[in-house]
Amino acid sequence: MKKVFLVLAAVCSLYLVSWHQGAADDPVAAAAVSDTINWSPEYKLTWQDFQGPIDRSSKGVAATHSGLISSASLSPDNTVTITVRSVFLRSSSWVKPEGRTADILRHEQGHFDITEIYARRANAAFRKHTFTRKNFNKDISRIFNTYVEESNRLQQQYDLETNHSINEARQKEWNEKIAQWLRETE
Image (tube, rainbow, N blue to C red):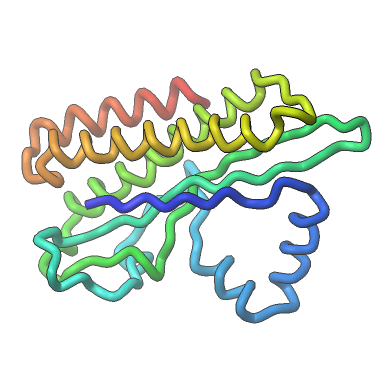
């Protein structure tokens, strides 16, 4: 099961600097940062990462809440750099006791990996794009939202085709596809 959130972060480096500094001084900001896991090839999700309240009304046994966050910086020569990262939200992701299996955890990791694939694709699109003062905000939103929507579609297709990991043969195929897409977008 997958829910994707959208956060379009700061558009200027001054805001980013103050936010990162504020996180160290502000316990609320620090808690918000510690609630997220940045995707990394060295880190795989564990059931301890699923700290959110269980949705008892859900037929699913687990839910991964991951999404894309963008940030922007402006260099002294007015070059804009947009960076997109994929993050996992601990306090929104949950698992029911009967869902704590290796197969379901691998399926949930697949959701986080799909989010990372779209972060990489968005970063590639931003690197290729030429921004002007006139189109800056509009283009950032358009490009970012395109990749969020594509990620959402693929997340739904992943759950549908694997039947939330129940279809083992299709899950294996998806595991291979996801691994291939991660290699292709490095």
